[in-house]
Structure formats: C-alpha cells, structure tokens
Image (cartoon, rainbow over all chains, first blue to last red; front, side, top):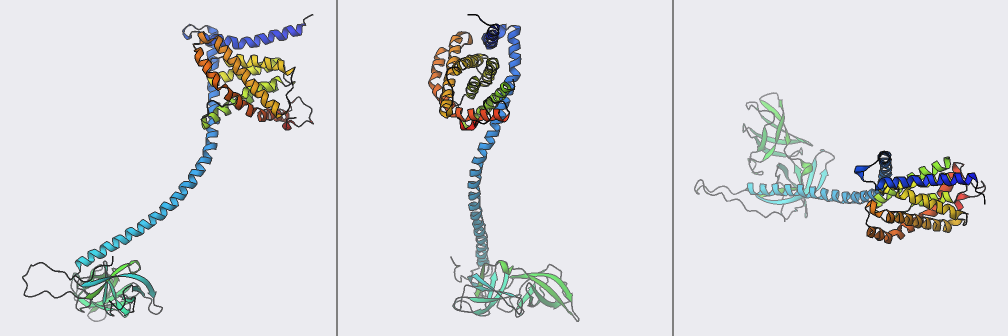
Length: 294
Length: 181
C-alpha cells in the first residue's frame, strides 16, 4: 500500500506539534541550576504568559465577585436598613426620655430649693386665645388641689397662675397674658414694679428713671404680692423705653419657654415665716408639701 | 485559521471565567474542564483540520498548565494526545443531541485526566511528584468529570452559535445550532 506524500507530511507535522509539549516537559524536569538555553527561553516565554493568564482570571474573578457580592450586599443592605429604622425609632424614644428625665430632675431640684408648699402638675394641653394671641396651658390638677390665683412655677422661672380650676384640670394664665399682673423687682437694682403681660412672648414693667437699668438685667419676683415666692426668675430686660415724666418702660422676655413646658409646680401655700425666737444660723427646715408625682 | 483562533481565545476566556468563579464561590474540586469540551468540539468538527485542532489543543493545554500551576507541558501533552484520540473517535462516532454532548464532555474530561495522570506517573521521579499523591487525586476526578458533563451541552451550543455568528460554522445554514439537533 503506497503511502502518499501528503500523509507523510501530516504525520510529520503531528509529531512536530506533539514534540512541543514533550520539549516543554523536558524543560520542566530539568534542574533549575543547570538549565540549557532552550529551557531558559521556555521559562522566559512562559512567565509573561502565566502573568497574563493569572491577570485575566483575577480580573474576571473580580467581576464575578462584584456580581455575586452585589446580590448579597443588597440583602444585607435591606436588613441593615430595617435595623437602622428600628434603631432610629429607639433613639428618638431615648432622646425623648432623656429630655423628660432632665426636666424631671430639674423639677425635683427646684422642689428642693423652693420652700413653698408645691404640687407638681403635668401639662396636658394648650389653648390659644383668639383675642389676646396668648397661649394658655392646661395642667392635670383640678379643683381638688388647685385654686384660681395660685402661682405656677417651672424650674426656669415663673409660668403664671391658675386662671380656672375644673374637676380634672386647670387653665394657667401665663405671665404674658394681658390680664396678668405680678409684683417683680430687678435683681441688681432692686427697683420694684408690676409686670404686665403684653403679647405672646413679651411683658412690660414700668420703673422710675432714677434706677440705672441695663439691657439684659434679670427680673425676678419680689414676693410683695404674697402670691409668688420671692426671688424666682421671671425674665430678662430686652429693651428700655423712656416715658414722659419720671418713668421708664422695660420690655421683658420671659425666662420660660412656654412651648417646652412639661412639668410645672403649683404653689399651694407660702412657706411659713421664720420663727423670730429661733436661734439665728440654725438649720433651715423646708416646707414638705406634697410629694412629686411618681 | 480564524476558527482555531476563536477556539483559543474562547478557551482562554473560559479558563479565566472558571478560575474567577471558583475563587468567588470557593470551589476547588467540582470545576468543569472547559478546554476538554472545546477540543472535543474541535475534534468532532469537520471544519477544523487535524493540524490546527492539534495546535489549539496543545495551546489550550499550555494555558491550563500555566493556570493550574502544573509542570509546563503536562496538560499540553495530555490535551494534544487527547485531541488525537477524539479525532480518531470522530471518524467512528457522531455526536448529536444534548445527551451525547454531555457524555462526550464527560469522556473527554476523563480521557484528559487519565492522560495527565499517565504523564505525571511516568515523570513522577524527575518532576518530584509522589505517586501516592497522584493516586489520591484520582478519588476526586469524578467530580471534575461530572462538572464537565453538566457544562458540556450548553458550552457546545454556545460554541456553535458563536461560530455561526462569525460565519465559521461547517453546517448548512438552515440547521438550527442551538437546538442540539
């Protein structure tokens, strides 16, 4: 059987092609310290190719990693978003509790400082008068405890007084109410006068021009009216308006932010006068009054 | 020539894809031998000459050597000899349908793994590879073959469609390549 030249050529080509991996294998089996030029050339050619293969695999791996991880991240993101909403809600509640806690602490501290017989009350509502543009607050103490005219205090200062007492609650007339008049004095000069309500957030006080009043001066209760305890902060002078004659009108901003009140104290009775027969410098016994609401 | 180049580029990309997916999914054993499927396709394709097919097989084996960190030439030789065996088989069998393609992928993977094992056993002393370790590796070869079995039909169809898109196919144009018929 005659063998064609084409078959011989094909066979030779196959042998040559198969010889390449055989030579590569021979190169692989050589001692690295005794490599021939051919072996070194094989290594030299293989190194960049190996780097290219590794790089392409790494690049595609990174692509798939991003693709696969994106789905996982989406699930994680949704879970974390849910946790975040829950935690934000809890944080809001905690902030609210913290504020409430601070106010209660201040209220309790005030209770320790003020000797008058007082009862705590919580604000339960706000009324806005359409005629006077004044906000009145409503507290959770009814006529069982509160009587019209009783002073209402907060840790920041004077709030007002009980206007109307109902069964379960009472309306408080704020010091900014145009009907409100309380006896006050300037803390520095001791100039006394009557503080009258004017607008939603302002009061006025007229004192003699003989007193050198400065803007920013503190106004406090004088206790002359025997309604508000003496020395309790009322507000701050923000403007001095000279009047015809020997008077000057002081515009006072209340020290209490009425929109932020939560707990107030209703003064049930004034503190007993000190016993003149007692020894001076003795221990001061505070009025006990009723205990704060738990 | 262009057909061989397409096989080679596709083989390179698939080596990288499998390597990347294996890295992401932490797979070490059940990885398909995509190069085995490609050389099977080339061997059973009338449009590929023996020389170009053999060159493609050796080149893909060389890339596998580089990628897998095997002694250079091991997989190149195994792929080359494997291609010749498959080419011989293509004159006696025809591969039609998904099942046959899957079986062909399985057998090609086993063939190349067997040839690789043979080469390594023969050269175990000069390469410094313990023979016990080589015999131990045979216990996981079936996972490799099984993964190739699963991948072979879609990969085969994909190669058909790619070659058809590049007008490098060797089938009549009215035949639908993706049906596997």
